[in-house]
Image (cartoon, rainbow over all chains, first blue to last red; front, side):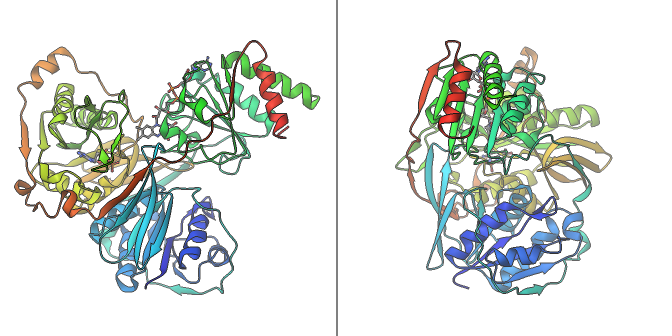
Length: 322
Length: 259
Ligand SMILES: Cc1cc2nc3c(=O)[nH]c(=O)nc-3n(C[C@H](O)[C@H](O)[C@H](O)COP(=O)(O)OP(=O)(O)OC[C@H]3O[C@@H](n4cnc5c(N)ncnc54)[C@H](O)[C@@H]3O)c2cc1C
Ligand SMILES: Nc1ncnc2c1ncn2[C@@H]1O[C@H](COP(=O)(O)O)[C@@H](O)[C@H]1O
């Protein structure tokens, strides 16, 4: 179908993910948006998708999709694509999104474009914009294969929009082949996180290798508390084991777009920048005046974070009168 | 247990990679190369597993002749042998072409487990491992931050948005590991000497049963249309801390009405 665009809907923490809604906004602008929703979902999931632009929802509630990774969903989606051939199918650049696209692009022998920041649909062909090498270049790519074009979309590329469609749900049969039950999800472990969530925070305070250790992250928590923000980190801090992966900002972590982003003891590697450079304001504290992060900052202090941050906390408390 | 590791050799992290406007590919030629740190972690993981359960590690890489230095590094770390897909016809392969070539090379080896790094450090599409798993017909277990093998049972801790998942599968399987899964060892002198005697098998696409039309630039489904530089964000003010840095940030926050 020439202008039908499918969105693979994902659920996290019992909600349709924001990235799903972002993709629906773009899909309904570029064509006729439809969604695929597989596995147990909250009761209002289909309504949420319809409200955000999905004119049709292919749905199957079966738990095989959450109990077994990738293979059952790939089987079902491949079958649907072969039957309906939408022009484009969008997947979030998430764990399950990438795994699914990997399988589908090989199975359908059609390839895929990953890390897509935007795209255009013209006469059945697709032109995608991809920020390359982190973000220092921007490329455009197309897929020359026949049939449905698979795109992996990076989070925060579009704004979710309310665009209510009449609720139209088509129930589809569950994948049932025994051979699809190969990668078993045995247990989901939720690592407790402190403070507000990074995704929605208006203020994000991130620390990097410059923090020097786990204990020192406490000063960022103090700062986050006075400002009502959330704490994030660079991959160097995560890989060192100082903070959990859930706090990582960047190419392989979360993408955030707060009003103010603090980069503290972070050099500004392209992979970090790609997760935060669209923030409204960027404030930097770094002792190296040559650090690339300064090129992206709205306001920067060249100095020792262990002096600047405590003074900032004191000052904010004073001004707030506490 | 025999392990095949797929790893890339890439321009060293100290060089700034430019994109050649004519070929629209990374200008990789002539710059110093190294084993991708992500691949070094995959080799390390393979070595740890075979040290515990027996068997050997074979590294497979596809790349130009610049890749030799990285292959030697993996051999010096302890990989028993290596396979180098070296062929002008494979230049310009997209993820699908790369995965077809790697899968075909893996099929020529005896393996119980294939280990990839979730993403390479220079192109990070992150879908090559899942594509390889499909072509091999083995289960894909991705984003691993810990791998345990018990008989033919494999259990991984898989990174998730909110923590981690415990995921089980059976061998043969393909695991893609996340960054930070381990600290790769440095090759020791003994290993470096031994590496010189280890075998590096070289294959071309046709040796792997793939016609040059299916791979490389010709076979690529993804075509780059244009490359460019997006407008840089205008750098703002930066001041050197002279004892008032914290207060100056507070002033800035007041100016933009955040406090
Ligand atoms: C495929 C791939 C994906 C990646 N994904 C991500 C990602 O998602 N997120 C990410 O962040 N990185 C990612 N990286 C890693 C990235 O390339 C960098 O290595 C990383 O971001 C560096 O972290 P950092 O800035 O904390 O450390 P460094 O680069 O070491 O910088 C530390 C900074 O702290 C400053 N500093 C030190 N002490 C002080 C002090 N007392 N006061 C003030 N400043 C101080 C130093 O001047 C320096 O600028 C990825 C890399 C690859 C290859
Ligand atoms: N040219 C290559 N040679 C060997 N392995 C590769 C190659 N390209 C990709 N891979 C494997 O696939 C993973 C993901 O690569 P990428 O899709 O480029 O992020 C890498 O970490 C390797 O394990």
